[in-house]
Structures are given as C-alpha cells and as structure tokens.
Image (tube, rainbow, N blue to C red; front, side, top):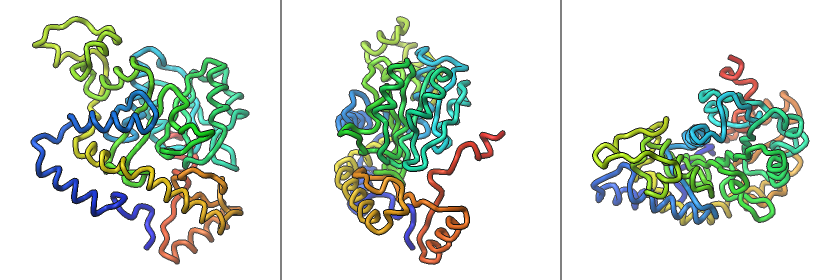
Length: 339
C-alpha cells in the first residue's frame, strides 16, 4: 500500500530513538528552553528574524490574525482576500475573529492566485492572506509588489511551501508574516507543530502574548515596552492578562523533534524535488507546474473531466495507491462556507 503519509518522521528509527531518550531524561516537557532553541534555529534556516512556535499550523493562522487585531493593523469587519483552494483554517480564523473573507479563484495552470484576479478586488480588501498552494511556482513576487503599491497587507499561509522558492527567495518571506506547519504529512514532522515567521519586532512580541493566554510573562523588558505594557508589581505581573489570547503553546517534545528534523530538512526537500521531476518525465501532460524545481508538497494530477477523475482515482485505488482532492477542493463548496 502506498499511503499519503507513510511514516511519522523522515529517518524514522533514528528520530524515534533520540526522542525516546530525550523524554526519559527530562524533568519538564511543557514549553521551555528547547522550544526557544528550535525557534532560533528555524528562524535562521528561514532567513527570518523571528519564529514563534505554536501547537499547529492552524493555530499559527489563528494567532497571527488575533495579533494583527490586537495591534490595530486589522479591524473587525475588514475584508481579507483568500485563495478559493486552501485549507479550512486559513479562512475559519477570519470568520471567528470578525473579519470577512473574500474567496478569490485560482488559475487552472498552477492552482495559485494571479495579479489579474487580485486587481479586481484591490479596492475592497484590507489584506491578502495568500496560500502558496502545494509549493508550486507562481507570480508571488509580482503579487507582493501589487499589494505593497496599493497599501494591502500581504500575509502568507506557507504550510505547503516550506523550502520552496521563486527567484531564489523563499516562500514565506514575501509578506509581513507567514505561517507554516510541521504536521506529520508536511515537509518535516514534529508530530504536530505550527510557526509564524516575521521580521517585525512588535508583531513578534504580540504573537508570544497571544500564544499564551494574553499574558506578558514570556516577554523581555524591551518587548513589553514595544507593546506599551503597564508597570505591574512582580507578584501580580505573571498572572496579568494584557490582551485577548489563547493557549496554543507547543511542548518540548515537539520542539526537540524539530531540532532533530531540521538537520534533515534540506536533504528531505531535495528528495521531494527529485521525485517530482521524475514523475514529470512520465506524467508531464497530466501535472500542474511539471517543470518546477521546488520540493512540491504533493503530485497534483490534472483530470480532463469528472468522468476522467473517477477513472484515475479508481485506477490508483486498484494499485493500492492513496489519493485525495487537491488540498480539499474549493472552499466555496464546503458546508461551513455555505452555512
């Protein structure tokens, strides 16, 4: 059986052995020093100033949007453009936090947004929360320039594009901030895990506040000053909640998995890229973006019609090969959106 997710980790035995030893020798497994170490190393790998780790990629989206609201960068009622083909929790936090998502159609050739489509909505939207679909190459640099020129806040959901590039610049480094995931089916695994990357010091401080209850105990004095936090006595300060927040902290187990897996990430992405190129030589007429050099998230196959799609999925199933919709199809067809 060829499964969509075969193993929990790349180099499974090595990682599980190290992880077992780690757990047996730790006094504390809630968020601590290993989380801090991993955040710093992952930020460096990503060429970003800050990496804030949370418990999932979905939580990363929630924390990012909540932080932008807390800082007044976004306001409730603002309209935000999003891909029609994306994951549910790219859109749900917008609805849950009082913003208005606008679904934008993607292109048929690369499954991503285009400048032409975005231009139709520039006078309506305050922000564009774009999804880098499957890590496939597209005109992200032109889209970022278009948003900057028109004063539209540009954000990236990069859960499927970790390590992917256009013009030698990593996806996830175009907008004010980006999110990523290390769920077991993604580019590398920490079992569960999510990240917000940014170069903005004030936003990074707010992300830490929103990640943990809305309190400021995890901030430095410099970060507290950036957020204009009130002077509070040392006894009460650790239990004072300055802003609305959640509890979506990662564990030291997740962070330690990340410290191991980060050493393999470039190697793993190289394998992904080679496999995609090999498949392209066999299926060029049936693939989206067959000539990409990126370590694409999955192998997206074009179907000529619904009948053709059924034929393909039946054939794959008969060969014990799992398949799925591209992400989860159009969000406009999902029950939660229709309701």
